[in-house]
Length: 383
Image (cartoon, rainbow, N blue to C red; front, side, top):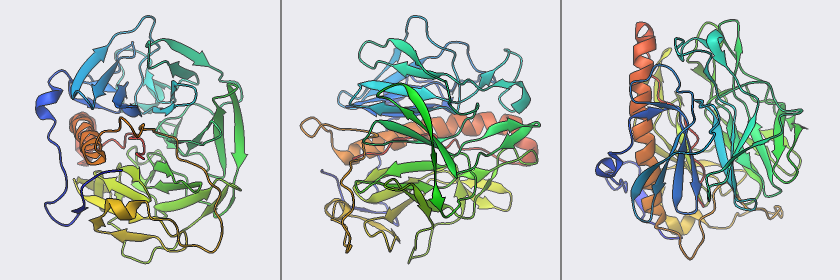
């Protein structure tokens, strides 16, 4: 793995300006991004000045090697949707697109929870020939959006949190029972968790470490009285996939300010948190801050300011042997992997594009509350 060291506290952050490369891409929001090899698939969402969701699902591809965007048109595409999740399984060679919501008509807007449709279908995309197919929805979850998603080495896709419509607002499902989709046999099951009981949340982000921990960061708990949602207090929780037990980790350093709608990316054992809104009362102030969580030691998590690529892969210093699993949300073949620093910059650049669109759209519909939403889109973890 190659990258440049940097500090989050100064100007050494390795930003990459992609503005000139993104002319083909309209301002977008509520999309989901998935890395397949050296290509980033940007799927679904709102584009331009749309206040409702177009009927046909479209997606764009950014080639990180050639640094070019392309818009993909497909035959018989499924219905478009926003705030869905997507994840790539390199073993099956497919992208799994699930959840989200779309308008019941062209006259409804994304701020009206009661007028939105919440599809139950699992949409599968072959990223090689761009062919769509449908997976099973039998025994799957109720309609919901803003979930966190992680692919386990076994081929299970685990869905965490989210929100469902409820009396004009939203309700967050319990974190005690999680839905899992098996990409090997197209079936749904549930996983009952134990241990700590995390606060229900939507718009959280999750990454899987090499030793089988799912680190969940952020999230909001929104009801009928607050459509945008307020950040949960237990912002950092960990799920051990060996026995599906939740824990509230010990953090020995000062955490970042309470925020919402951030993105997270895993590089080695460093969890990189970027963007979102820092909370000021019930309102959020948009931020471009970057924070780093050192998760190497399971008994002592630390927020740090220095990124050192040599230290990111340092083995855990523990007295127990952790199960040897691998994070397979995103796979970059070693022989063709581009510079990780460049990829981080590219992904962050895409998030900026999505964030600008989100801010504009939410301002139009929630300006009476003086709240501007930055979408917490799922940018998959890097390895």
